[in-house]
Image (cartoon, rainbow over all chains, first blue to last red; front, side):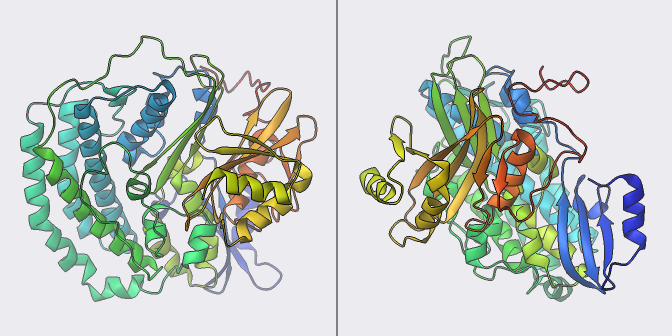
Length: 378
Length: 151
């Protein structure tokens, strides 16, 4: 971390070989949060990028050590706030694995439906924000039009639009709103009609393609070595979809494709996310008329105690693989908990991806990494 | 790939390693002295190809620290957990950031939050905390009266 005087000094003086050090962030519109990048430039060419983290570090892992197994899930909504449902799901699944709780069929389907709606909402926000980074303001309004419908569906059922806190150990906290199915169907109908607009507006736009193609290339080997997951890895041709490799809940009973692109550049990552939204719609369509009747929550004890041991679950969030690692000593709260967040690993590849490219390409690369800073800092 | 085959391979590289199969995955307790070579062999062996380090963390057991590596293979899809013990007073473990590049960031995080020194790490500096921060927040004996982390 730099002291204030050092920051001013760094931005004004050139280094020994005419290098210029500039600071992007922590308050910068294109970093989508308090990410601080120290960029060493030679002319317009990037020589090195150093991320400085911690501006929103809340030490969630330490906090969880003093929270019990029902409470700690609520904190995780604040990690990757765009995938709140899926974070909650990972934690609930980890507790269920430790206590061997059988989740009712209805809860499983609800969980998958909510996860996929979250994924679409997250990708919609990414699309609007990324286009805005590149100077296109209009797509933001198009994507938020659809995202708003999802937020309303969430609000009906969970009472929240961002920090959902809906998944609990044993199922979900409350039953679905009576209008849920009807509203989701209306959303699916509208989304399918309008996804073509995104392609007309962005995908087939020559200015956009010129900004994205051949930028921020990440090879398959590097993607694996840097531990990249999610659309970042799949854009480089690495098969990494947890929903396919280690299916959880009802993902093994629905049909969907794992989207793979081999380009490894920003455009490939863009295409992966765009096509993933359609796959999520496909999953929702298969499940929305087949929500089983019955309990939405298994009967659990008032006080949850995990047996002594170690438990690890992984789920596919909108950004990649989220792992929850609980070390239990048999108490009511975890002895140690670790969240393996997708953004942290994806960010570590940034320096490698943009070295030697122009500074204008940095935003196109960062836009398709889809970084959420509270997820990186935790 | 069965756990037996992985065990045989690990024993041939690091005879002192012990195993624990009570959990979901095979747990390997490796000696710090043999860990670096074991890591290289696990990564390079075409038979096992542990090329994906998906989680690197540390646990404070009060008497000692344990650095935990979750390894998986993107080709064969098997997973193992490696645990390397370190002393509380002066914890030192060899870096694996030259083998799995994701370890560079993860080791920096463990370094500042637990105080584990990763030997031969290319850039072992604080990543999240300020440079003048004292103490290791995720250790069990850490107390900070001003910024309460405990709820």
